[in-house]
Image (cartoon, rainbow, N blue to C red):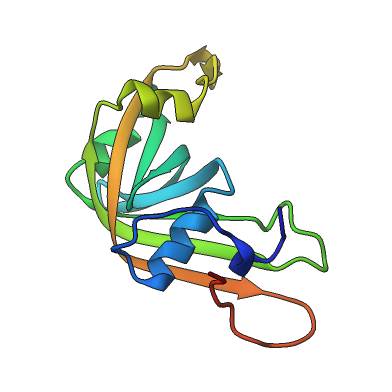
Length: 155
């Protein structure tokens, strides 16, 4: 797969604008990101496994952390990037999506896409909880060496 985010040909919901499509295509390239919201008036970040289904993002978190309780019914930010795997010559990208978060029960097909859950989280049995974010705001930012052209989606 090309390291240039604009080279993706993944099929995403045709009803989305090109920037939203690009954001969701990039999220499909990585398995984990971070969800951000506040709990008792304090901000926090929690790592989450994600999949993209149509124009939405499904998250899998460990129920034992309790972070899902702060997320459900709240506006959250979700971000992921390729900064840890991109080489110096590759385009580094980051995606941020903001939207209302709700608890969901994934379908069997969605569970298959998620793949196996971790066995343990902080030494306790991993207990999955699933959330859905329908992005209202999406942002894609890139860092690249050399020329400064703007990232564009290739059809």
